[in-house]
Image (cartoon, rainbow, N blue to C red; front, side, top):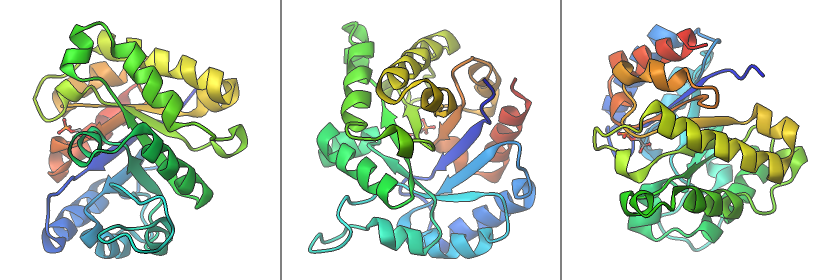
Length: 255
Ligand code: PGA
């Protein structure tokens, strides 16, 4: 089954709006017309509006890094799905390991966000992945299974079409330690088998499963050459146009 590759830039808490716009313009100028790879950039909330203007008329899509499950109300400091939609945001990263570890996000809370995102025509990028201790204890697949099953609870087959899952081993994020292509492929194939059980064969075969964790131009080709690795969720290497565009190039070249 052919699945178009997807490269998502997760800028995390980096770039003022002024700096973000410089980077977005560079990315748009280099890959803005490419349609053979799905490209999504996820700047901080403060840069979304400006980024949205720059990206108008390009093929680059805009994503947010988080979202609250409620549509409005007394949730100081939070941002909702309609607020993102108004800025032409199409994707939203949910359950990133940094949100889970530093902000106490549980699978149940992440699940509420996933359901709200789908209901509001935002495509969730659901992040899952084990810590080093969990991998060393042989618990990788069990941890990933729980996160996928709980994160997608209540998602209907008919609405799950654009679902994206990102496998990000926590020990590989921002550490320079990348999972081997074989380690990643094993977990990706496992995630796809879970998606078959939860959402059916058709949705599972169409779903993109991204790898995240120190993906760089130097290691991208091997990872992206695996059968179930459909792209990358990129942190550090998405903060410079050159490395991010090289990754998009690698995704376009991967078979
Ligand atoms: P990294 O981050 O590429 O800097 O390891 C990936 C992520 O956390 O999404």
